[in-house]
Image (cartoon, rainbow, N blue to C red; front, side, top):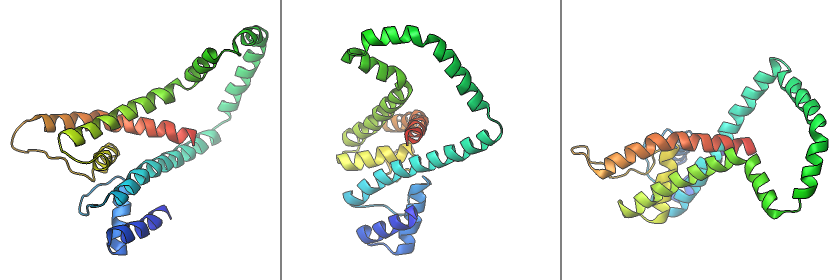
Length: 202
């Protein structure tokens, strides 16, 4: 349904046929990135940025859900571990209650408790934003693109869609070739891990 609704949007905004719009929605949503069609307006690019992030999160969440269902059916090992943790926690409650009574009023403690509990998600999202920012800076400085086009390049490249093509010189080594190659090689896994963490929240 998500693809078909997106095809309607692309068809209306880009003045493409519905079948061409469905093709584009499929290749952008599944991050294939053939590049046969190119968006030429910012509204469409903003939609694709959101479409790629939300779509990839939904796909990641659905895959994680189905894998979790399969694993849970193989045994109740998760429940056993949970019960053991509850028994262990109950023996430590008295000590923890005393510490919590002294510390819970502190904003500082609350902040660090939140950070400690969510540190993996926070680190992944920070790395994700740094890589997106690096792609935006590259696009604006080296390619002279607008912010929207640069963000579009950054998100679609790291999601493996590659819908905005950078200037790559196939005949000589230069900064652009090296930057884009290394940025994509390191950024795609960062993007995947960050979206996996984000899908886990959903």
